[in-house]
Image 1 (cartoon, helix red, strand yellow):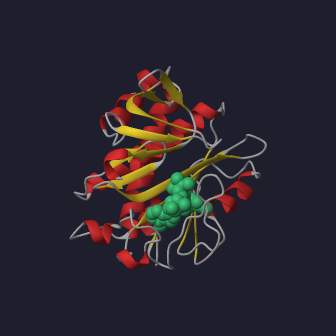
Image 2 (spheres, rainbow, N blue to C red):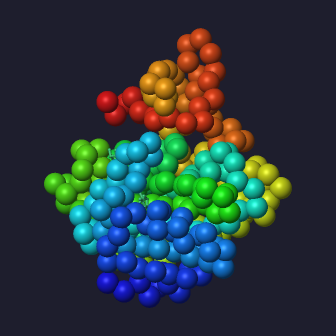
Length: 254
Ligand code: BT5
């Protein structure tokens, strides 16, 4: 399939029939400092698609959008990586809206349609901190049987008239470029408007949640805010926690 619309809005665009991981490919390419911001690699199939924490991202050949966007922010820290993930989620939510598909953003890195995961995002910094790669998988054409987990969905399942992969990817790149410009040119996260947008479309705020921390402890409470550093604020019975890394379960869905 050709990606004429998407390549027109990127600063360079490689489409691969098949690869291991577009994030891995773009991180390798980023070591050449001549490769510009908004260079995009996309693929029809990944044999080693990465999720967070050594998990995998799986999609049959030709069924979905799997792409990574190169960024070269001036400062890279954990908070920026978190905001970049959320900013990509906002760009995807906004792009789906353009095609009349309502979605919401589950902290820290998923886009949901009717509580089911349609998209996962993975932002990774290069080792030399010269670049960040933001990769996303959006399920487009999969049937329920082709999805790896039961709480996943695709645009084909959720919408009577889904956009083509090229139409949607072009929209995502355009929206991401706009939101990234706001994020990086503003004095702080408040002035950028990104935090307010993230709160507006959050599927997590106001929910009873269980947080599973990377060290395998957990906590249950109400998600009440996303703070300036992009952390989820959770009120438990006894304390207020700020969560920077972890998985969140929305308890109403269990
Ligand atoms: C993510 O991780 O959701 C980040 C996924 C990022 C994938 C993109 S594709 C392009 C780029 N190149 C890469 O190599 N990666 C990025 P996490 O929150 O850890 O969720 C991973 C979990 O989502 C898995 O353990 C499964 O349970 C589930 N999963 C896997 N494939 C899925 C799919 N197609 N749809 C919905 N859920 C899926």
